[in-house]
Length: 310
Picture 1 (spheres, rainbow, N blue to C red):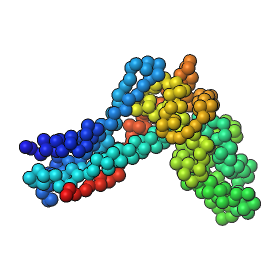
Picture 2 (picture 1 turned 135 degrees about the vertical axis):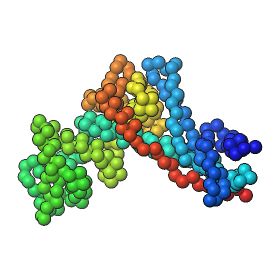
Picture 3 (picture 1 turned 180 degrees about the vertical axis):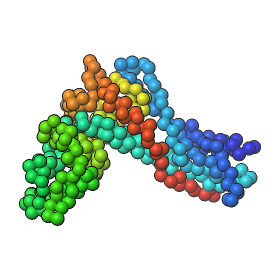
Picture 4 (picture 1 turned 180 degrees about the horizontal axis):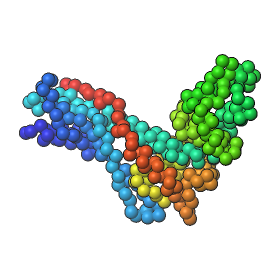
């Protein structure tokens, strides 16, 4: 029996059909055979306008685990199936977060215009408004605000992006602030451009540090439309009930009334389009999303978690 036959037989009896193996490699130093485990994970994607025509797309995940054999082709170490499944689950969660990141980056200008975005990011608007009226926001002024720590956090965030600069006694505008101001037709448009840039470049920080969970719902519903389209690499027609079902599966409980409201707002700002009873994507934004997906590095799952066999 050769090494590949032995590995495939072991794989079938211990891992099932979801997990497959790569080509085995012989480590001359250790004098053992090593073979990495992978999965071509199937994703069934449905276009609601033609529900009978389901698409199957595969996401290839490498590095789920490893099997090691001696020179005599005896299995000496192997990643448990449970660990492989955990790695696969982790990968799918990472992919969802990456999909969110792609979608936010491509549609930041639209998301910055949804209702409540300016209120949720009000400290940024306050900073922008003050810098438009005077060149420096002084430290003593910040201390007089009812939430000085939060204002300083936002100032440091804007500093990272080159929008503001720290001075001896306060903060002033940076080069990017000036450049975006020159590109904007008026102050309202400028404030939206600032919010858009911050959302695009620091959405994860806004989510994790500033806890803007209410705004996050817009991103999640947008993702429930675009993530399957990105996987299918084509814009899909999706009904409201499909998006609602995906939201419950991927995120948490939500009212169908809230989903309908947010979908309406995403349509009104151009993040999505409405065609009869279907939601349909923005072709220009989607093209950018697909391009960003193609530039992503392969997602690495957690360590293989090898266990020696008794």
